[in-house]
Length: 76
Image (cartoon, one colour):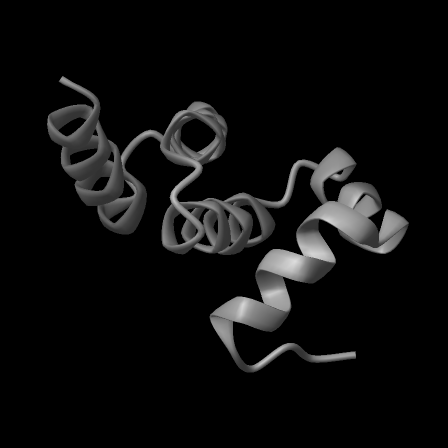
């Protein structure tokens, strides 16, 4: 199943065991997608955690770095 919209990803990120399974595989892309889904649903702290998980796996990921900076500003 491919999710093409952020709202559908947000719903799936919290209700689908497959999404959690993908994250357990240490998939950077999965953390980024769930982070964006959480961000658009205003769950900034959880989104920041996801972006930080992505950075732990891939420290130079430009998308995750930008998202982390953006969310840190929002949470101040």
